[in-house]
Image: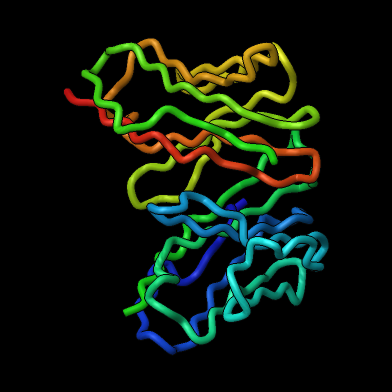
Length: 115
Length: 111
């Protein structure tokens, strides 16, 4: 399996622009997670999906952030409008189940810089 | 709520030194515990895990034992290599499936 795939790997944009991050989970995994990593706050869970349905979006920082999962093999995280404080590395992860014993597998991340 | 606390870094060691990175947790219920490693410029990779008390996870010479009585999951390696230089994250996965991470510990191994 190719693992979790994310694109782009790097994104540089200007404040106010729309940014879309993409993720393809591991085939057969029913759970998909979006995380943000910053020096100040570490790794934070933003939202997660089960069978394409958002289950918990309590970590989404504000209305400028939205996430969708139109099918089992694709998810997007959109920021509109972007701000410099959104600069971070965004990770997508997937797992087969929600059981605590199950492993989450991470993608390589998207490094976002908002100027 | 559930939380994970790791020793602060950076940790700098000479090659072949013994490594310990402390990790303690607070959780309701019976979480599973994980160590992830992040090499420079890369994503997180699972290093090892333990799913119940007294379990020992091991991989690539690293070990950690799930200690319920001390709520700890310390990472150890008997002889580190330069290639082990990375950031190490302790995490717990709660009953609802969420992963909760510690703040990460940067390890630098010098030749």
